[in-house]
Image 1: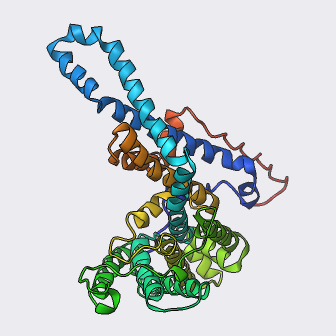
Image 2: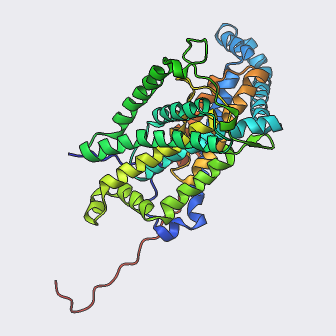
Image 3: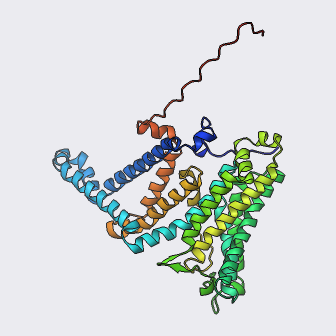
Length: 408
């Protein structure tokens, strides 16, 4: 019996909103408010953690029970010092994210792969699937794109297109495997994607141990860097993979909102059984969805591998594959929301370096803030309660009087 896996409640559309209302800008306001409140609450909790982790605050708290009188005497100074520590930390965060041209470039470079991988998770969500396999899809894509990038000697442009094509094709096949297993055997995509993440990693390690994937005269599991002819060209210091991520978001929007396949994805995600009754091929939708999700993950790794001219390792993906899940959740499984969430997480990632170097704040704090944002976003009822936000109640439909003389 096939197990259906509906998208998480936090990202599913409001069932009370019809198609016409979904296009109304006012219908997005509650979601935007809830998301902004979630971000502010996460930053507030982060500020509290920064304050209580300050050395002087810790020393003052130690004196609370030993010398309570002195604690309350110096409480004002402790509060002022804590506020200063929070201000320094968040100021360093902003400066590290958008405070200069190089900071903004770093933010955009980190946002581009998050946006593409997040779109891969988003499109799976809309079809009722949970794609946790972006990491494995990106690893396999990096292996294919990197091999074409450092092995072949092709003209610029053609070499880049060949490397991108190899990467996205390999990732699409890797994602399509999940769709086939789901459609033909009913294997749950959460289990298969997690397992394929590990298979993808050890596949990369296997090939990196081969001489053709290693640097000359080295036995390290590290490939040569991709050739200059296989890298994204730059405009004003930014590689063109960054605007390509925005083009991908537009493509996903068109696919979901304007194409027949996108309609089938949304229909299957809402009610698979009703879609099957209507004559839709559930197997086709699952396979196509996961293949496209893998393709987007492959495009994401090219932003790192070909955009920054890196080498292939089993760690080249970093945390992008799993951060993409949080980006899709924060973006409410919409292309625009995913782009904005990717930019936010890219800014947090880039600004976290500034917090560490300038304010001495541990980088793990940024991960805590990211996790809190997702936690609050995933609990909209909690957010509305804490933020005192109440959704406007939909007026009840007027009762229709039964015509006189009607028979039961």
